[in-house]
Length: 372
Image 1 (cartoon, rainbow, N blue to C red):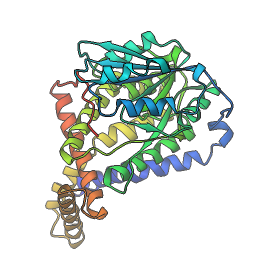
Image 2: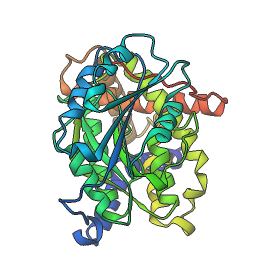
Image 3: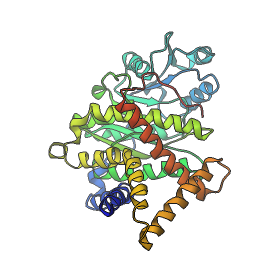
Image 4: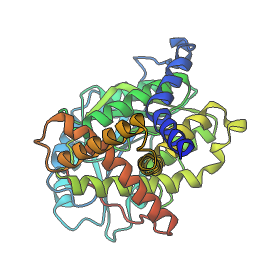
């Protein structure tokens, strides 16, 4: 049991602390000129695709925000793709036709991938930008995102979304962005912000339904020999999901799509062919998504070791941590110290549920945008 306990312990520690430390060591060997080569005056023609489904409450704000971005109007094409909306989304979006906003409607709901693929068919420009309706971009976000394409090695660029406040979701998001910046510095990121990222048109391929489009774009970019990077100054604000149940369901959907995508690109897990990127993919995705299993093994192996004072102390620390998580479940008004354990536990539980769905053959075929 000691072997199982320490194996589980070190896997958890590696996933959350060892991997970031490895990235920091590798990034110290990289010069800034090796990793970040962009031209601030670079202005490439771009098509911005916004897929929507029943977004009447926020679509006007999203369009106005997009029109206010600091980017030449003659080099930006804006496309709204409605995926079977049954509310006033289309009526509202059409009002902006004179502002250059193009609206396309798919009367039958087919999913986010189908909406994005329709956008790809309609888009005219060399860089494709993908943005969800739920994110409000800062004025220079698009300009800062697209300038990274002045580096011919770059095929995909992720923006950075943030959630105001100090809740568990916001803290977890900041941790993910920290990792993404380190990954970008040493080569390529392993995941993009699905609500705001861009890809070269000639690297875009039709999105299969059931896969995570942003993850698909990143892995396809690396597969084709280009870099996928993040741009810290291309920021957008997201609202938090209103209740724990909705956030849990969103996480399960997201992780299920991510797992399906990872298995689709399982050849990228070969470090002999893809080097450090494979190590990143294994560490940041495969191991991280499996931490729930190791947490369970850690807890129950600890039960058999309570005769030792050290192991008993560790066991009661685990009990206290999960007790704090249970208190955090009771509401966002709880102190920050309770919300972090809650969000950590919720993320790993959602991964366990997602693995269960994946292994049982369940796939997330229809896109369900979170109501924020």
